[in-house]
Image (cartoon, rainbow, N blue to C red):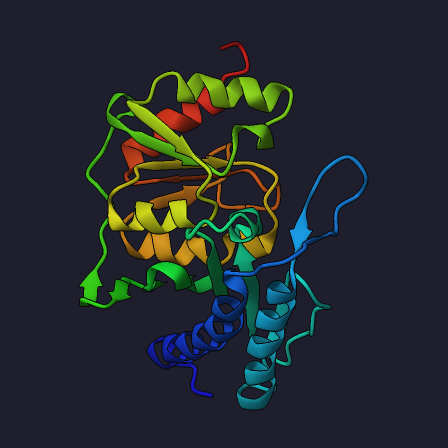
Length: 265
């Protein structure tokens, strides 16, 4: 497999196609979901999650045997070189099992640990968002459309989303609320699709906490390729805390970070 990101993006599209076959066949009758979380919370996984990840892994193992694989549902495979794929077969499993159409497949590619290519595939809506370098595109029934984040530069004009306000605990909840109270409007429940719409310009700000690498590796290159800013709650680029801020513009990012950092309120 070439090191050319455009060719690797085409291959990522093949991975998304393979995942679609498995997820769409099961979406109407998602069936029971197994809880893979510890006692006290519900973190569902379905047959479709596992089958979709297995389908993507099989393609990578066949066509890119030296590439690593880090998926949500199965054990990681170490890379034999700079490349590693990050796979989340169904981000938004809750939406999937409730028959909602906004669940996505997240496919990220890392080079020496840095996310450089991201795909957010939205099978039920027929949308695919692809980003790498300065290329960001939405592929759907209307063709290829270049993506660009909105010009929003202030919280007072911003449209904010997060998967759920329940993801924020303790002091983090207070910090998030300081931002939420200042935005123009907010919507919850869209999981990875919120980042796709930020890249497309219809969402201005995403703030989340408690994320795992497979939740954010695909969204980072997509949002940045569309002109947006992605960092942690301190404004840095290390996402290891799982606290993510994605914004349409630098001024909006900076305003949100100032509130998230201000423990005094």
